[in-house]
Image (cartoon, rainbow, N blue to C red; front, side, top):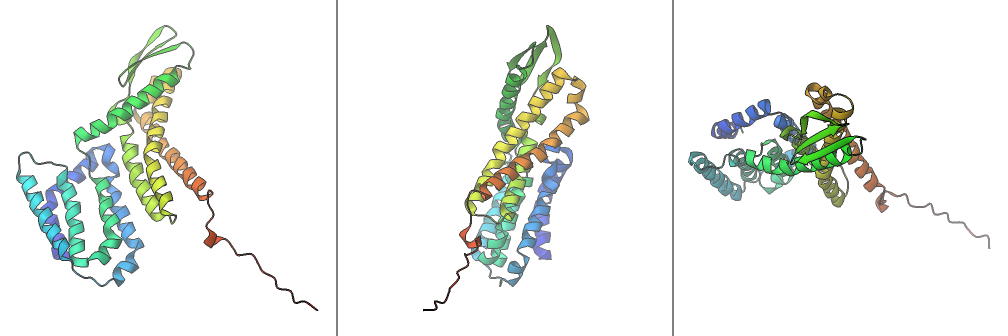
Length: 291
C-alpha cells in the first residue's frame, strides 16, 4: 500500500498541488478540504464489510489502470491537453488501483467514496462561467421584479445589472449580480452535502434520488432570495450593508435555509408512506368457548 500510494503521489503530485492551491486561493472551492474527510467517513461506515472481504485481484482494473496512466501522460505532455482531466484521471486511477488489488467485492463498498472526490476538483473556468451566467440572470430578474413592489422605486434590468431610481434619485452604484453572487459556491457545496446525506440516510432509493435532485433547485432558490434581500437592503437601509462582511454573512445564512428546506422535503416524504414492516401487527386474542 505504501509503494502504490507513493507511486500515485509521484505521478499526480503536480495535480494535487494545483488542486490544493485552488482550494486555498478560490473561496468558491474552499469546501474542497472537506470532501476527502467525507470520503474517509463513508469508508469508515463500511469498515467491517471491507475488512472481512477476501481481496481478489481483478485484471480489468489493471487494464484500466494502464489506460488511465497512459492517457494522463499523453494529456499532460500535449500542448492542447485538457487540464480538467488531469485531476479527474487521478481519481479514476485510484479507482482502478482499488479494483485491481481488491476486486469487485472491495469496489462495491468503495466506489462512492472514490467518486465523491470529484466534487473537490474545480470546474474549468469556461464551464464555470457558462453554468453561473444563467443563475445570475435568473437572480437578477427575480430581484428586479421583487424590488418593483417598493413604492417610488423604478428598476431597469440590463443583463445581470439592475439600475434603480428611487423617488426621483438615481441610486449609485448599480446593483451587479457578480459571479460571486451567482450561487455557484452554495450549489457545489450543497450538492456535495446532498449526496452525502442521501447516502447516509436509510430510506428507499427513490426518496434518496428525490432528495439528491432537490439540492439544485433549493440552492438556486436560496441564492435568488439572497440577491433579492440584498437589493432591499441596498434600497431601504444602506448600500454599505451589502458589501464586505455583511455580504458574506448573508451568504452564510443561506446554508441553514437550504438545510431547512432539504429537511422539510425529507420529513414530508417520510410521512407520505408507512412501511408495513415497521407497523406493529394487531394483537389477536383467542377466547375459549364454554360450550
